[in-house]
Length: 105
Image (cartoon, rainbow, N blue to C red):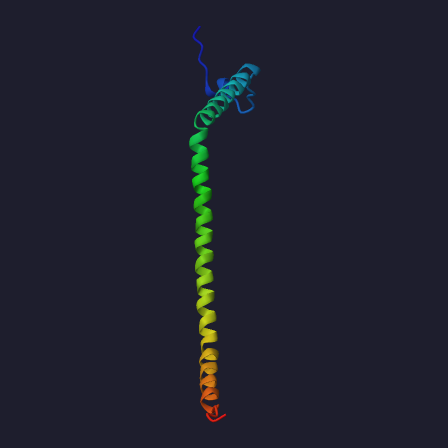
């Protein structure tokens, strides 16, 4: 007698894998984790260097941004204070011109 198996016989929706297949799955995951960890151990100096370069780059970007902000604030402050300085210069000139020093003391 020839056995004819249909889809319903071999693949059921309520199929629960046996313990052996679960063990194989765990073993496969363990192998992948072990391989990842060994790769990390081998390439630790490379990864450390890359992370260090990234941190330095981010720090430099923040510093450059802060420098630009500081320069913009300085320019704004100069533009605000320039008219006061010009007014003080004019006042100083008027005061020095109006003071006369007697020559015959």
